[in-house]
Length: 109
Image (cartoon, rainbow, N blue to C red; front, side):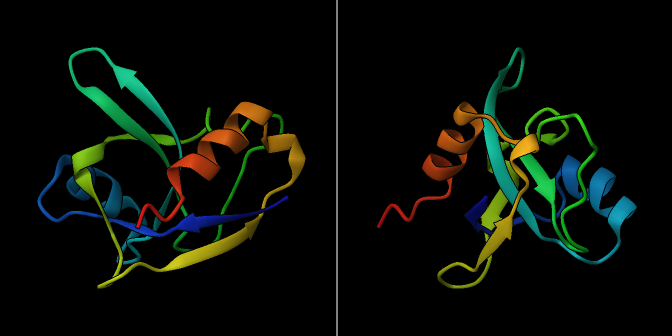
């Protein structure tokens, strides 16, 4: 299923920047695939790294195998924003996940 995502970057000097980007190197490209409320942290995004292409584990939905980060740790790329159209096999999606992706990656302007 082809879905449109807003590409986001991890802000510098955040925990996610120090811990996650050191693992991936210089590419700083993430997509939001869901939301979750984490006790002690509040509202967070579920994100997938796409710097070298989306890599998914068979049998596990895209949201479950995502990273969790504070909403404040991400920012949109560029002066407007960049987008990516990704063809995600249906085995990694549920109707709720698709609804979340569409809602979270909609242009609010």
